Image (cartoon, rainbow, N blue to C red; front, side):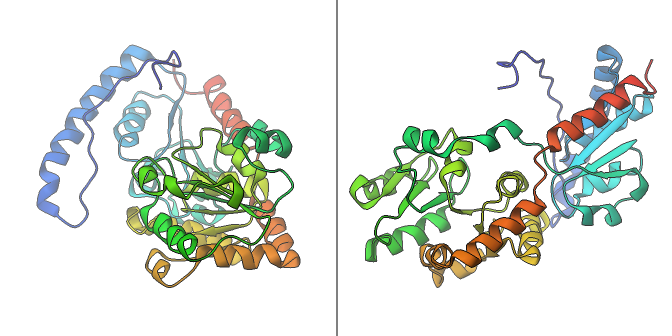
Length: 322
């Protein structure tokens, strides 16, 4: 995708630390040393005006090399609880952008932290519901539940939805847009039925359009998913991925739960909780639905992309590089 967009891609041999197996980190340290050398060469050749890191272990040697070369640096943390790399880099970065205000107190220099939100395509928020519904094979004026577990899908969520649909239909005149992901599509595509209001897709390329039609979403709690749903004021039922690093998806979802913007169901609870029934209860209670939508929108930061770009350009224009 990067090269197709016309940008240069340079890869480095960085690897992530294995938290529970210390001996497994010996090759990781070797890869880190090789990455540091490679990044110094990249910075010397490319001569950047500013270096931007967006979290993860690959960011570490790149930002450190830029800092040592006198290049202004900015890092962005998308999750509520900063990762190990972000905490380390916050000691040297000129600006640290975060998605959640609570992140600031966990970083080295809170005065360098700016609460920007997570970058999204702000133009997509204004998508028209009627046209988006037509493109997706949905009816614009019917209550709509959107399910997405990401591009690969979420098997535990898919199994929960399938169990319900095997027993009972949706309420009359309601509809469901279900993105199963590539792994499970063949297993669940048979549930598709226009007569029952069930649209099943392997992948929804136009997720912004799907959110424009949706009245509630069932999803994982990745940071960018949360950014999208709060920017739109979309009530949600979030099922955090249980194996995310440091359980960051649960912590992301808790921020919305505390604000009254979503309901959270753990992966372990999916064996007993009916996600579609829970969605129906929220949609049937118009007051509750409206309150969740309002509180979600208060958390949204639709101008995050522009805010982050402004910070980057300010560093580039008045930065420390040659």
